[in-house]
Image (spheres, rainbow, N blue to C red):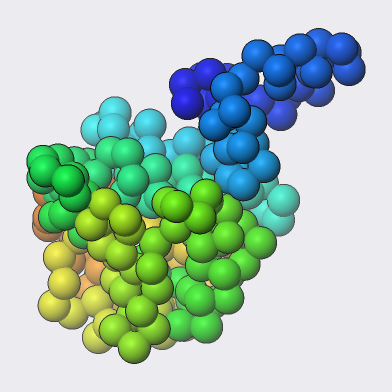
Length: 224
């Protein structure tokens, strides 16, 4: 849907007259019109499309620090994790062949606590399970703590209060939300770094409020 993703849709529509907005919507295909209603992806600002930064391949860590209202959850979830899982799985180790091109794509999703992961990162108003078209939504297995997308891409759920949850798996992409507030931040972050060893160029996306903790300052320094 390049028509909807090549510019800042919300900003452009705000600059149009009502007649121009009507004409724009009518110029879209039925599929694109439906996408406007069931997905938040077309409404992302360019600064929230983190998959583009991952694909550029210039960084090992992408840090987004902003206050409430910026859309950090959308940036990390829809603009980063979901976009890569569904459309660019090769960036996180996906093999890109056959009917399930996402197989081999391994992603880590980590929040402050397990409850934050489920209630904010997945099921919240901007969460991964509520902001995408139903046919693209990943299946959640709470018992195993995993997400599986329709194309075979997988994610494992972890929490910053349990460093041991990062032990064992390998990821090509890690989304760490509210790292500044993780209860055992340094220990969990250190374990997460050791798990980033899958795919062509493993990358961590960090979305957090701008609190100058020693860990966040060190991450910011590494991102420069």
